[in-house]
Every structure is written in C-alpha cells, then in structure tokens.
Image: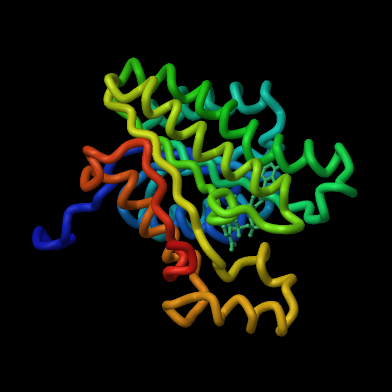
Length: 254
Ligand code: NAP
C-alpha cells in the first residue's frame, strides 16, 4: 500500500458487533473492517455471519470471529466475550445493535411480545456492556455504542415495547457513561430514523409515502448513514463525547 494512503481510523482495534448478519449491523461491520478493525460478530444466523466474515476478511485481511447465538442468552454472551478476548486479544468497541419489533397496541400486547422486545433489544445490551466493561476498565479505554431509535425519543403508537426498549438503551448509555467516564470508556447512543433495511421493508407504499413527507432531507436513510455515525463514535475523533445521543434521521425529529 502507498505511504500516502490515509491512516485507518480503527487500525488494530477489536470491535464486537451484535445483530451483524444483515442491515445496519452488517454495514457497520464492513465499514469497521475497512477502517482496520478486527471483528467479533454476533447474530443467530450462522450462514449469514460466515458469509459476512468471508467478505470482511477479503476486504481488509482482518481477523474475524463469529458467534451464532441468541443475544438473550446471558451465558452465551459471557462465553463469547471471553472468546473474543482470548482470540483477538482485547476489546475496544462494543456496538449493541441487535433488535426486533413485535408491534401492537399496548392494551392488547402479550407479555411474550413485551419480553421478547425488551430482552432482545435492552437486556442484551446490559449483558454485553457488563461483560465488556471489565476488560475495557483494565485497558483504560473503550467505546460502547447503543443503537437506539428516534422512537425511543418520541414514542410511537403500536410500538410501546420497542419505544421502551430504545428509551432504555439511551438511559443505559447515559448511566454507564457516568460510571465509566473516569476510566476513558465512552458510552453513546445513536437514534436512527427511517433506514432502508429488512426491518422497514415490510411497510406498505402508502405508509412509506406518508413517512417520506415527514423527513426534511427528502429521502429514507441508508445503513451507511448510521454506520458513519458509529465510526465517528468508535474513532479518536469523538474522544470528548460521552453520554450523548446522535440522531441520524434526515431531520425527522428535531
Ligand atoms: P434487521 O435488518 O432486522 O437486522 C436485525 C439484526 O439483529 C439481524 O442481524 C438479526 O440477526 C439480529 N437479531 C435479532 N434478534 C436477535 C437475537 N435474539 N439474537 C441475536 N441477534 C438478533 O434490522 P436493522 O434495520 O438493521 O436494525 C438494526 C438496529 O437498528 C436495531 O436495533 C433496530 O431497532 C435499529 N433501528 C433500525 C431502524 C430502521 O429504520 N431500520 C431505525 C431505528 C433503529 P439474526 O436474525 O441472524 O439473529
């Protein structure tokens, strides 16, 4: 490589990313690989994770490990965090991105739908943060990025469970930022707006047209838009930023 090549922003750092098999998490993984990070990738679908690992290694020659398991499983979370430390040597960046929806009016919502969303979206982040904080404290450095949602800021009819989980991710980030700040561990959240992924493809044309009218930027977001914000929060450029929420929504909520 030419000596004039720009310095990679995450050279040698180890990033653990949940929900990496598709959508926003996959895009964050590929951007971080391009910026020199070693990757520990988590989702349930083993084939999609392995395909991503092959792509990331081909892109940058970086080290990649994968863990195909449910992020609700506390034992697996601890086990995979240990495996990341054993195999890749350290843990610098944690991105809590795995997320699901189970929409419905809260008055008719089952406990199962409440628990599935709260446990997948919020409890998993707590489990990974608890596991990651120890090695990050020893290293005296770390970055934790929780992928929340604008719905966690403004609420949404039919998404009480999802909104509560996303507001929880923001409050969790702020609390951890206060507990870990003196150890040089920075904790922030990203609140994406409407981003084109599997999660939003289920919407009908009428719904999409109505949403588009509420976005000042005049377009839906791309996974790359969120990945660039995650790169900023993972890189040296955000060294004095902690406990914040970066909204990536084309101006939908302001
Ligand atoms: P997506 O395409 O549906 O991807 C979700 C990811 O989470 C997949 O990799 C999925 O992998 C993983 N996942 C789900 N449940 C899991 C579980 N129990 N254990 C392990 N992994 C699990 O969603 P996306 O749009 O990329 O969203 C990513 C994050 O951004 C989510 O937290 C979402 O709430 C948030 N967000 C998205 C938007 C949007 O407009 N798309 C807006 C705001 C916020 P497997 O199925 O392989 O397990």
